[in-house]
Amino acid sequence: MPSEVPVHTWNLAGSRVGHAPSGTGNRHTFGGLTDHAFRLIPLLENGARAVWPWEAPASG
Image (cartoon, rainbow, N blue to C red; front, side, top):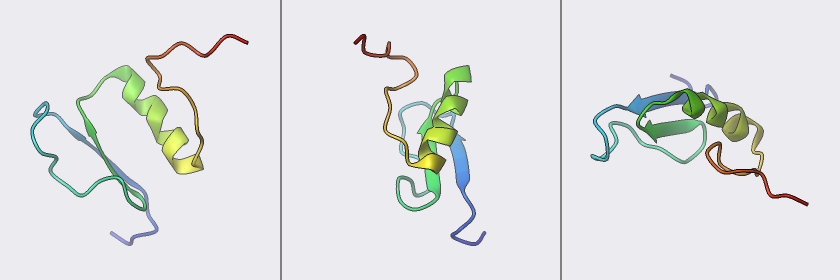
């Protein structure tokens, strides 16, 4: 897979070591799978800084 193509995978084995490199460039491995995990993809791809999906937005 070319490095410019985003790759998102899920480690369904729980907290064990991930099955692929993660956290650099377009490669990300998530620990566990929930409906909220899919909300992380656009944040990573856009480089956005935001609260985690399970956190309430700060009131202001």
